[in-house]
Image (cartoon, one colour):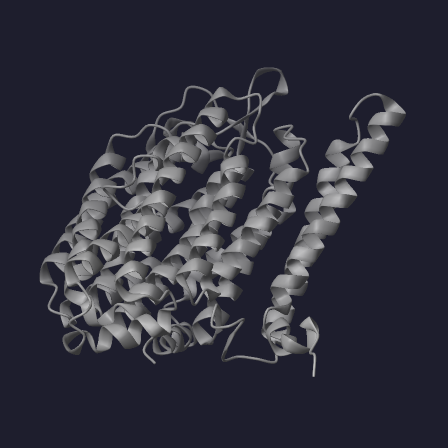
Length: 509
């Protein structure tokens, strides 16, 4: 009996229906944007309707994300392996997808007015973000090295373009070019690691790799040295994408040169997906070879924490400061993976959720704040010194930024303190005392430059009173939600502990 494609993959298609819906919706939005822009150009000889088009596509993209989010919540399959063991559905992928939807939704929401004000009149910007979100969703579900590599490349192609989306800016063009060259180099390293692992094991499926490596002492036909080299290259490729030191060289320049909304997106969604894929590959498939890859992550964790703390002290530009701060946070999150325990993975993703909330808050505020200069011309924040006088003219925003900075620094009783405390506690439980001590020391050092921002807002002398533009409703909403989360997580953290515990348990089976 001949079965049609739909009959053969009926349940598989239901399992990835949210991704199919989002990809289809994005393609429809692309066709709508192309047709509408072309018609307006023909009629008016000028591209006067593009700003309106961008706003329409932005809101339609948000609606698509909301519907995909609801489809993911109501999926008929919570557990299973689909498409010939290429993709997996479990609690780990389920919660990661929900976090990715929230991060992408927030990015587009606070980008709507930014695109209009910066005259980034390219509707393809939203399309590329949606396409990269589709690839990120597939990345966290990947159950095979081939599927994982293809998803990473799909994501990277979109990132290369949106990094250089500000066409009239040399910095944006430079950021896109640097990201393309170094990203292609890291993809080659990643692919070489996958090929080495396949060459010495004969499989690419993560579950089959886990079974083979469990019986490694009884399998003399596997050359351990070649396998270790493959794992090393695979780890380096992931750490490069994750901006962990010493593979961070592209991050500060790309973060600074890209449009601010793109920098926010780079700080949110890709880190969720890469950490998810990294945890599944190493904690699930390569757990029996923990000693070699644990050393790699310990070294990178220490290097990231030290570099993020020390380099950020000397920064004068806000986006470069946030870039080095992001590198430091990656170092903290690698502590959880280095532990090699369920508690370590749980601490990693608990800290990741808190990091996402803090990043959304601080970028919502940066995209909302605009100084009004002479002639009523608005200017966005670029330097740390631009925050001078904020507490006198807008005390509520200054208080919000102060709370977020204290949370990032890990000062109790804010959310960031609980995330770091749980990470350091799991490191001590796994006898990784050096990681815990360096984490505490670098947290103390990082308090210097975070508190320096508070000093500039509250205590720096000002010659003239600065005027700030009004804050958009979308940014205000995101600021309120994330501020409430950061402030009151310590009162009732149980739901987040339960969610992260379920995610960690999904990797242990």
